[in-house]
Image (cartoon, rainbow, N blue to C red; front, side, top):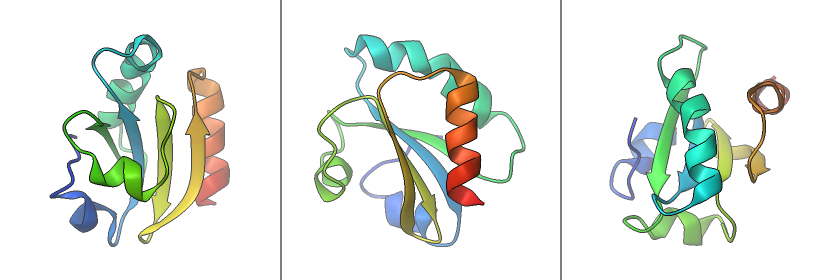
Length: 101
């Protein structure tokens, strides 16, 4: 799912959301993209999406994102977890589970 400055509030309002912030020119972002795309297709009880920070500046500014990739985990509109940098699929899943439990 593509998340933008315009649809962001509606998506996080009443959902659990795993949101990757990155850019097309970012090598580590491209490395984690296959994991994110795989998770987007799974029925894991939360929404998975990506934000291109070059096209959407409000979200990274609002949450103080200074490094990419950054993964923000939202539950009921609030950030409950954050993962910065490239991580393995197992590490990411563990952090998501810990954050939303």
